[in-house]
Amino acid sequence: MSLKGKKILLGVSGSIAAYKAALIVRLLIKQQAEVKVVMTESAKDFITPLTLSVLSKNPVFSSFFNDSDGTWNNHVELGLWADAIIVAPATAKTLSKCATGNCDDLLTAVYLSARCPVFFAPAMDADMFQHGTTKQNINTLISFGNHFIDPDHGELASGLTGEGRLAEPEKIIHELSLFFSRVPVAARKKVLITAGPTLEAIDPVRYIGNRSSGKMGYAIASAFAAAGASVTLISGPTNLKPADQSIKLHSVQSAKEMFEAASAEFEQHDVVIFAAAVADYTPKYVAEQKIKKQGLGMSLELTRTPDIAGTLGKLKKENQLLIGFALETENELQYAMDKLDRKNFDYIILNSLNDPGAGFAHDTNKITVIDKDKNVSRFNLKSKEDVARDILHIVLAKWMEA
Ligand code: C5P
Image (cartoon, rainbow, N blue to C red):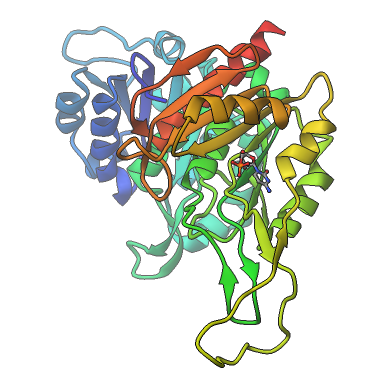
């Protein structure tokens, strides 16, 4: 989600991290947001208004009155102009003033008169951040509905190491983008996603696996979480971490474990997306000890794994939406449509190994979506994040129709 056209008011207070305000403004402008900056007097000791004015393409405000021409800066107007306010860096003093309604400077007066969401990105020494007063002020501000972008842990201006470094500008922009990508209808929905490969043990050190990276399923989880849905991700072994802290992760190894986890979760979810590459077969017996090599060949007896999507598809309730994936190499559309019916999916997402850049381990994917009525929609090659958003939009459209 981009911040294009959003009106962002950046409040800068007096911390050494104020120099990062230049980077924040630059990133906002890059996303085509409109930016106005309000600085406290002490912020000017760390970065000049001129820098922020040139970068934001707007005058920078810091006092109620302009001595030069006798005009005043209307704090109410500034507060009402903004779609969001970010105070970054937010010092202990500015937090304290905002928490108590002490509005003796332009920034705190703008905060108090604003009706839009406000984000605070604190920056201060670790001990100041840990202090009960600061914690209490932060809790008060959270109880008023404000948002916080937590500081990072690391080296501080004091020479000490701890929590208090202003979050990196990219992270601040990411949090803001996430906020604007929230969709009210999604906030009431629960989404279950299976992702990654499954590993089927042969003995304590060997397994049968596949090349699934999990990227598609994790990207779908992020897209739905960013929209505000409550997301549960059941994942086989991958190198990935869910991008959003709100995503509930169940890590599993085998198809059987994935089946058990998905079955336990299935009923309470509105949408279930089967993005995992589940092994079709698993060794019939798992050797307790490492199998020794003997002779020139060996064979393994395999049995079928549970068909997670197929089994849960039979339990689907009327208000549930099921989405499956199909990775095909021939007769793609026909096989995908058969699978859609057989597994009782509402949509099947076909990715073909014949398309360069699509499928396993790539960062891109090219999908064709088929719905229950066999309508076929073809999408271009895109990043998996963009593909995930396309899938989100299909589901959002369905939710909004209901
Ligand atoms: O492997 P297959 O082509 O049948 O996979 C189609 C869909 O079914 C995918 O969405 C996959 O995640 C799901 N599936 C499953 N359990 C299996 C096999 C596949 O959930 N054992």
